[in-house]
Image 1: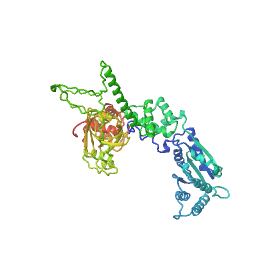
Image 2: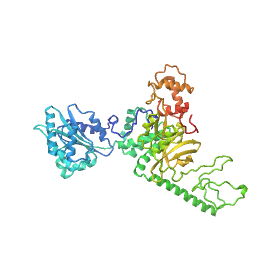
Image 3: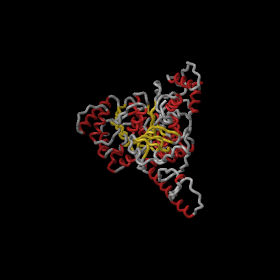
Image 4: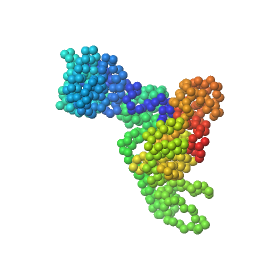
Amino acid sequence: MYVDYFGLRENPFSIAPDPAYLYMSDRHREALAHLLYGLKSDGGFVLLTGEVGTGKTTICRSLLDQVPAEVDLAFVLNPKVTVCELLETICDELKIDRPDNASVKALVDRLNARLLETNAQGRKTVLIIDEAQNLSTDVLEQLRLLTNLETARRKLLQIILLGQPELRDMINQPQMRQLAQRVTARYHLGPLEREDIAAYIQHRLQVAGCDRAMFPAGAVKQINRLSKGIPRLINLVCDRSLLGAYTLKKAQVDAAIVRQAGQEVFDRQSDGNRLPRLVAGLAGLLLTAGVVYGLTAMNDSSAPPSPLIQTEQPPQTAPAETAAPQVPEQVVTTEVALSEPGAEPPLSKAWPDGFGFDGTSEAAFADLAALWGLSTPLAQEDPCSLAATSGLQCLDRRGGIDSLKGYDRPAILTLYNDQGQAFYVLLTRLTDNRAHFLANGEQQQLDIAALESRWFGEYRLLWQPPTQFQMALFPGGADSNVPWLASQLEALGIYTRTDSEVRLEGTLLGALKRFQFTAGLTPDGVLGTQTMIHLNRALGTPGPRLQTAKAN
């Protein structure tokens, strides 16, 4: 969501084990050195352990990029197998022909023949097993027996095991002492040191195309406290923090954003019902406050009325000619203002019970597609791909009402019921604080405040990019978007086209930044999805609008 906003080429804090993002701290450098030693040594086991998320798999991926040409490699990713299945996997990795349903002896014989053949050619064979803590005792014993395959001068198979600390404990058991004696090198990878965290974060940002500092010292301190130096947790917190900075339209991540990100990453993941309980507790607190105030008011008639919570009062009989119109009864009424003559009646600020609770994302997308004149089957597995055939693209974002107003397109909102389960409604129109919703064919008009306890900023909308727009255009870039952008900015009266524009630079780049600034975007000069949609809005391109009754 925030990649275009910060001018990044890609998400810098993905938890995928991409070796391009490997930060070589002293500990990671030493761990990689142990694995490289395993590639060069003869026989036995090399053991790399570490807590979840410390970077073992990423180091292993980096190792795979450095495998010498004379090494044949077998890589096992799923070690939850039987002895026979493990041998079959090793044979398949080394491209050894084997019959179906072969016995253990037959598989070992074929493997031994191949190892002798490669050894005669001056080559060696290495077996790497990731997530090795999932190996059973009998499979570990079979691995030990494989290290018995040898000639008079050298072992034929080198085995590298990567796993969580439980693997180390397994091998140290008395019944595993024969295997433990064959471990020629072992290393336990711990979390990053405090002084490495800032450098780790900046390294990943630079790889993704960002050279400026996004996380000041205060934010890094919070990340260290939350993550305990575990790289995967750092990635999760940083990713959520950048999303928060994007939502707040900030150029940097501050400590407050990191604290909120930590709450979202850890508290809500560990306890999915925490939020509904918090909402229920707050409602109970408000109700208690109303009761207490009512009792106090009965004993003190001079007490001023509460401006926020109006407790239910005994009915008053008024003359017919001065009777006020009745308002639908609310459980809790907050800040209800008197309406001017002829004004629309106030709307409910509470989400109606049951409205949209069974709404699916497929049904909501079908309603959204209909606004664009498309027909989308409810059973469509990838409705965005279907929309793409009509020249439309999906945009999934997390933000607030202001960001939706900026895009000015109807949007599918992801809401949550009291049990924390997601449901989906379509926001079709927005005028001031009056929101129009559609779910399962039912329409509702509500005060936008009704979203406060149900919506956490997740939405999807459709938009129509120009035919030549395929990917973001960065400052200095040259593609077919450059002349198109020049003509669009000229139509907006903020640039004079020369018909010689080749690159996004100079006065054209300055005009784009001025447009971004006036549109409330970060003036980074990147022609990405957000800027393109705001250009569509400014130019009045066709399609349903969120803040107007009709499409342009």
